[in-house]
Amino acid sequence: MMNGWGFGGTGAWLMVLLSIVVAAAVIVGVVFLVRGLGGSGTAGGSTPQAGLRESPQDILTRRYAAGEIDREEYEKALSDLRS
Image 1 (cartoon, one colour):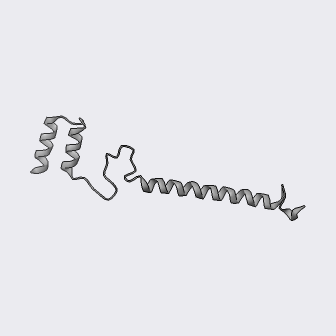
Image 2 (cartoon, rainbow, N blue to C red):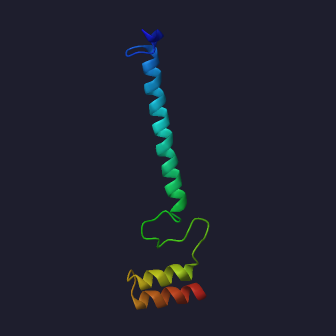
Image 3 (cartoon, one colour):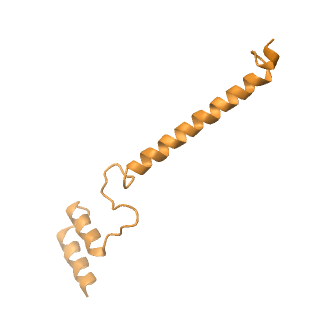
């Protein structure tokens, strides 16, 4: 009977376990590869890459351009930042 390597033997369980480990390693590898190639990791790419920081003026300008704040708020905040 194939010395325990047939169906129902210990070898079958080892093969199943090995297959699960290999499949998990492949999935983890693909995830790391995709994240590494993705750059900033955001779908829109509107935020800076890790390690690069926007200046307060850049953040303010981006918020104004996106319509999050109006002109009055923008000018007041810009004046506050410059003083």
